[in-house]
Length: 329
Image (cartoon, rainbow, N blue to C red; front, side, top):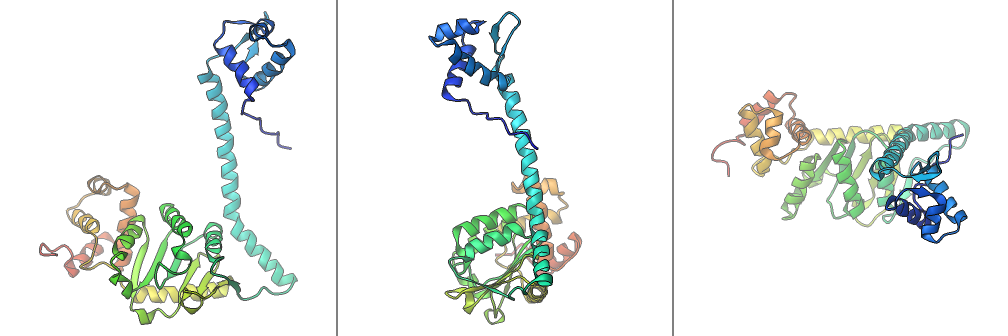
């Protein structure tokens, strides 16, 4: 069995006794109790707590000794932080296994019990919690086809914050939006912020988006009924169904266009200009005031947006579209 963790927080009386020892001349336990006006037993109880934490000790002559707290308390904190790190790694490992555990569980139900329903209905009020669960328990790319950002669980503030954390972690997020959303004066700043964070975006004519859905790795699909404005959602988990929606998304993604034309962000244009001049990634990061990881992620996103495999091909694609011409407005 694992030993019980030590309690690090000092009770007020123990902390009072410890502070007294720190600022007092060396002495026996009896002398310290007398200085405090405490019964000997009361001082002994506090001392035993400090000895258990190795914050105080009694020498051979009975004198109570304390060392520099920067060393003793610091050592104690280092030990506990190491324990927390080890525990955090254990929890992360368990979370990483959750999806496979759930898969095994559902497989067992299919083999030994009634088949799972093909879908589960999710009320709009429950959708943000379902999204949170799917993001945390799934692995792989997050794919979404959205009709906007002010409807569905995507407009929930907690879901938006979670999205930012997911992108910052390096997980691939690809989104398809309708072209009509570009007419929204607030959209450009919002889209640029998400793109800068690492989201890959493409756009389709409105009539090409017949359904609104999100794919969470292999964890499931959340499908909006009735456009996702007021209707419920369907949570689809069967692997074959997930495969169908992944294929649908990839086909839509192939037909969609990136928002990288005359409205390209100034930062991306500057990035491409510096690339054309032969700047290395480290120099690009310094010039643009970005992290090296963000620069490399943005270059990879631009290559994907333009359907190329190398940086040389990216340069050719950009040159062909005239995005770096001197008369660009």
